[in-house]
Length: 334
Ligand code: SF4
Image (cartoon, rainbow, N blue to C red; front, top):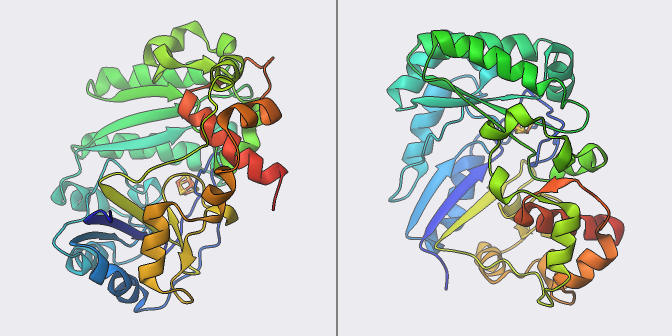
């Protein structure tokens, strides 16, 4: 059955960063045509009762005129309203004094900022010199402007000695901004982050002082444990759609669900070439090249062929499943 609600996001403006962990992938900042937003919504409007439209799925508010852009996203939506989430552009926070008051006006009360380590590491991981200083400055500006900053840190074998230092920086700031939050995790293993598999954090190497702030530590497994669990699972990978469908549209009009990384096997269709009704059918029934191919395999087989059962790399079981399926297409392209 087709869900009644669609969250529809288009990469209208791109992103100023090139984070090494980006699950959405590094794609060019190609400005879409002026009326691309209307065209995209019109493609799906006949098929859904409610559509919440977003003009971004990478950096929110990256475009100039972001206030009007937000109003236009609302106006284009159908019987629904786009949400703000706890996301904002730290690039814009430090460049535009009107931005934090705007965030407050549209109801943002907490913003997540991402850290990969200290200055040199952060700048390299974000792909821009100055990114570390910008995050620190954005933290102060948010807190003073009445929005709670939350730091999320990605840990791996390369930066594991720096993350406790970052935590100390958080503790210093927390004295000034008591509501400020902090957490650490290993991140998924999709998109660009899959390239970081060789330096994925080993569970035994997670510094003890980080464990209280480690997201999902209680259910964190080693790759060895994931392999052992999945080797018992003879079912084929399948990912049924829930009550709400999320579709991302690239600057080239390729359509993807938000199930996993936006790579070739997962493309659902292209809005310039395919009938939108057919794109909806494929998205809802899982009729993509990836899911058709995976139906011929089992979790046990994928774990057997692709897993490293001697590895102490840290994963949640679901992240490990997504790592396996994407690794499968990388190693065995059809
Ligand atoms: S993780 Fe977010 S900010 Fe970083 S490159 Fe990807 S979309 Fe841009």
